Image (cartoon, rainbow, N blue to C red; front, side, top):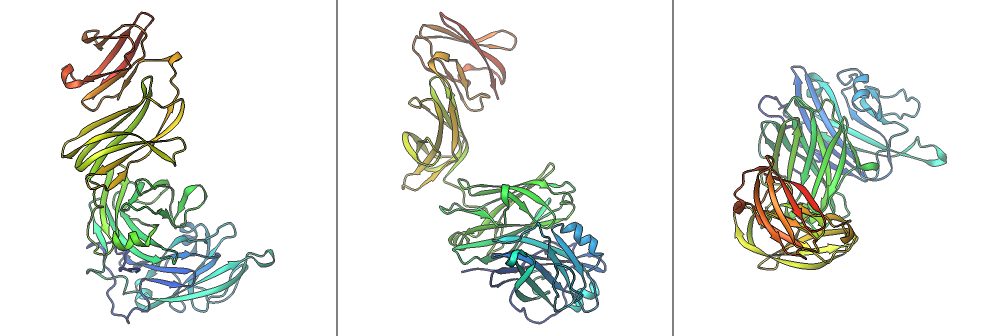
Length: 508
């Protein structure tokens, strides 16, 4: 079941005055489906005393878009010259307030409108989404009790991509999607940002496209946006992502990365000039229908300069609801090739009903095999450190992951780490890890054919620890609390009959 909750550029709290004029009943909701088009009205906000800004979204699930037109009062134009909209929507040619007078590669709109015509080198198709923002005078906005929106496809018959077909038209009630307040307004306000749900649409293939809007209240431009979903065995993705993982909206461009292991989508800014000081953007992601219906909440995070803000937005209840935490909160998982084998280190911040960790290895990052089991702590509210050394790994690249198993048999997988094992006995070296040392233990891996002497010296040359090492020893574990040395820089020396080795050690 697809759910639609009213929307949004209503992001905008007490300081923004929303239009409240009484208008007819909605004519289809704030998200409307018409064949292969999904039209979304994101709402309207007052920018100045006599200026309203409206924003729409359009998803095209079939052939290329030729144009989309938004109704204006007869004889009026969108506020501001057409050149303004050319700058804000560079992939489109804009015709502002034209009913007829069809020009080259353009078509007639049967009503007065601002029309966005896709340029020849731009394609909006195959599930891609664009947002369209324009301004109206207050008088024009109030004169439009409803707004018609019309989209037309561009086909490629006879080598001419400009032939158009399959026009579809929907009608929006402008006031229905711009309420002043109330439970329909799915918005969460924070000091540095405002987060909002901007509608969802069923794609008809077992997935739902969810539109999430973020307003940046800081004066710094957005650097990164991330969206995380609840755990799901099915893939999540970005709607409308182009080649090279480029995600473009009306005004901004990002590099999108999808981490299926952590159900995390990250948008790294490539061009977010102007995304500051109250500017907004919409991020559209595709999730399985089951996930959207059973766990419709998304952890949304934004960073802008030194500012960082995060919420857990439930798109059904519109409450701040974080993703259900895993029984075991894994802080880190790292691997390093040593001459004793591949050393794996991981730490947990807390544990609940944690029976064990199963260490799994893969040669291709896809097919994993169980190689070891490490007992869990059961229940813990303090940080704990774990380790395992894979002494059977040969040379080459290896992939590892942890399978955390509860007492009742339920399990979760960690992220995957890749370790390139280049160490051979012929070039055996002493290895100190983890380094920097942030847990209670530090390990020294070595491969000595004779008895050796190990010592640790501080930066002033004073010896703070010594130990004799028997021939054939492969690893020594040292307790940092038992060493009774302060945080800082140290040097680990190992001298055997053949050579002397020295490595830096940083204790944090």
